Length: 228
Image 1: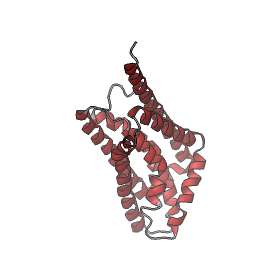
Image 2: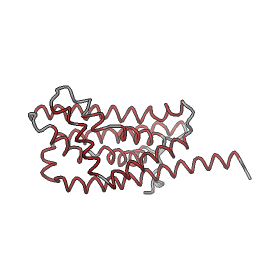
Image 3: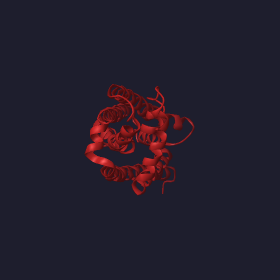
Image 4: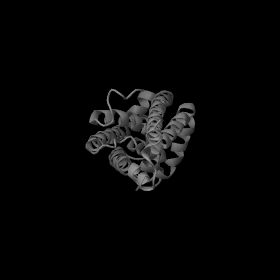
């Protein structure tokens, strides 16, 4: 996937980079099927209230990871190039697991929702973390934050575009969870696995793209430090 026509220094470029990655790892449609099973004993108003709260919390988790993750790692001396390579590897490895064995991911998510079936205050834990936006989503968001431009004037458009992508993913979580029964009837388990593999492949491509930009950054720094 080539993002060069729309650099990440532009708002649209940042959005088009961040939205597919966050949508792929969160997978609101696939997660809605498991949410429907886990919330089967709850009333419709309860499920709608939970869906709205989960969407809001998911936005806060993704936004915090996007805005702060890269800077926190930089504080500990991790360069942008190294952060991009490491983040891209995490994204690619995560995507490879989702691509090759989506059933294992489904089983893990089902286990994460077990405690939500008998408790009332479950919107943040476990239904937001780790079910909807767990370590995988946070690591992807941090990897995306490593793509921020180094120029001061371009940083704000990047974070605005990435934040809009996080907001749209959160809205889709809210809508898909609210309509989880209809999503279940429309897709079913087989359709959800096909969708999971498609978005996992997209996420793998994005991970490779992040690695490539990190390698390019590191090579450029090496050539500057060792001219000739």
